[in-house]
Each structure stands twice: as structure tokens, then as C-alpha cells.
Image (tube, rainbow, N blue to C red; front, side):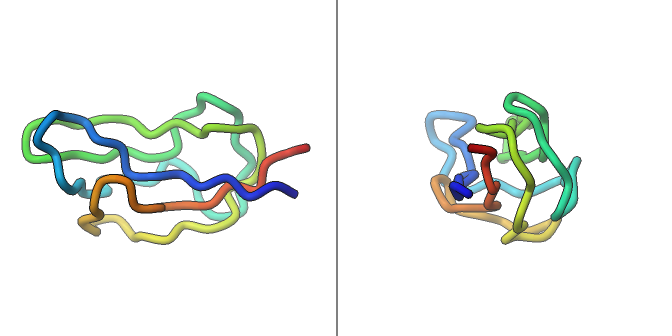
Length: 81
């Protein structure tokens, strides 16, 4: 299986880190490309993180409440080939 990294997105021009507000899926859940898997927020904006591929959410690397730098991996999806 191909491992796909899910990264903390940049929601605004000055955003340097974001907080994970909620995981909509848990490790082991199947996800579809475009499905919302997490909610994150910066100081000014709240946004959704979508699954980049169909597959299984193999690993969640940061818990709810964690502040994560933009571009850092927050989860791994094992993509369907």
C-alpha cells in the first residue's frame, strides 16, 4: 500500500501553525478522497482537512488541541492501489 501524508495546511497568508480542533475520523477508519477527516484553526480562520486519497486512516500523529506548524505531517493514509 502507498502511504500518503496529510499535512497541516496554510489557511491564511501569515499562518505559521494551526490547532487541531477535531478529528472526524479515527485511526483505522476508511476514508474517501475529498472526505473531511479533521477540523483545524489558526488565530483567525477555521478550515477542514480532506483526505487526499481513498484508503485507510492508518495513523494520527497529533491529538486534538495540538498546535502543529504549517506543512508538518499530521496523519498517514494507506491509499488504495
